[in-house]
Image (cartoon, rainbow, N blue to C red; front, side, top):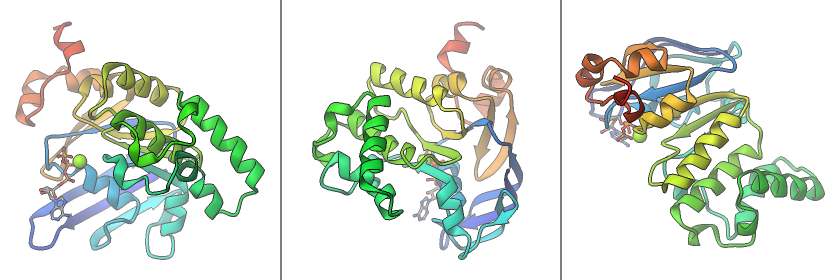
Length: 241
Ligand SMILES: Nc1ncnc2c1ncn2[C@@H]1O[C@H](COP(=O)(O)OP(=O)(O)OP(=O)(O)O)[C@@H](O)[C@H]1O
Ligand SMILES: [Mg+2]
């Protein structure tokens, strides 16, 4: 359903940040995109939402090609939870942040209230509803940012570093939330144990290129490959080796 062909992108005066010949993501897949710092993971996610524009190649979703006119279609169908929640939250209260997207769609106030309550409850943050979004802890903000995307019910959920800087309990909660979502999922992370627990396929990005892809267990337990791409096998697999 989501397809990338001959995608090349560079930031001004920089070498290619993305250099992908082909990538196909089927409905219902849960894909882990891993690679060292600067490999191009966040850039790739931004390209899918039309946040970065000056690229060569094609990105299609359900046979619709991404361009200026179809960008809205992509944004309606793909929900991105940013690496940094401060880039996502901007309203005075948690309620306002989570309700914002639905309000923009002109949805009835009563319906919005019910949807916001439900999504906050599902993420275990009902009590944060009237708090100021920017005065929450990092882990709380992360869950509010997720709520603001979940409430829109996109077909494809994209998480950029969802467990970054979370305490073990919050991290576990996020893993459980991701696993309970019956959607197409794209997840980038350096938390390879989390990737192992949440993904059905792993893609290794290195210097903007896909250098390997396959089953999480096969790739993540390949010591030589992981070393070559400057990563380490996840702890859970190290203990099994
Ligand atoms: N706004 C920008 N302007 C110029 N170069 C950039 C910009 N953002 C990223 N880059 C460069 O593009 C490359 C890919 O960066 P990107 O942020 O996509 O990597 P990443 O895989 O997400 O890394 P990390 O694991 O650190 O989050 C890097 O070389 C980076 O320096
Ligand atoms: Mg990144």
